[in-house]
Image 1 (cartoon, rainbow, N blue to C red):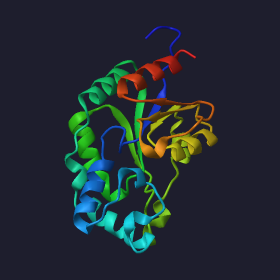
Image 2 (cartoon, rainbow, N blue to C red):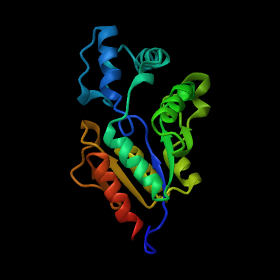
Image 3 (cartoon, helix red, strand yellow):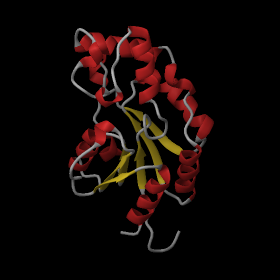
Length: 207
């Protein structure tokens, strides 16, 4: 690393950043419940054609507890560039909206494909409900506590929250229906592919 480059603290979302999960989850949901929810409605307010948001959350919770996501593999490109960032001396963390009951499968996947790479794995319990609502944390608060310079996330909502919390920059990952915007906020950029993320982070390290 050259003298001009900073060593950054980086936060990476897990689902649809490190591993592609939305299509897998939605396909299983439609299969089990005989629904026809399209990918465009993954974050829509129609509750995935359920009778109520509570029913939709119970359905998804049941699928997630089955361990459906445990066997999803990251792409070769993702593995390569995450390792490159680590070798450059950046400090990497996972900040995921997954719930705490998914921790074992999350950690197992990270150990299998990214052994020794991530300093911490933070589950923010974004969709925790009932008696577990107290477990919810915002990614903005978690990134602030970690001292993160950059968040890499597939959702604009989290990116905007993180910027409000004082994080320097956000990389919006992928080209998904839920992360489109006519104009990105200041200090937010879009990258399609992990190589582009790597290049953007290296650019940020020289600012």
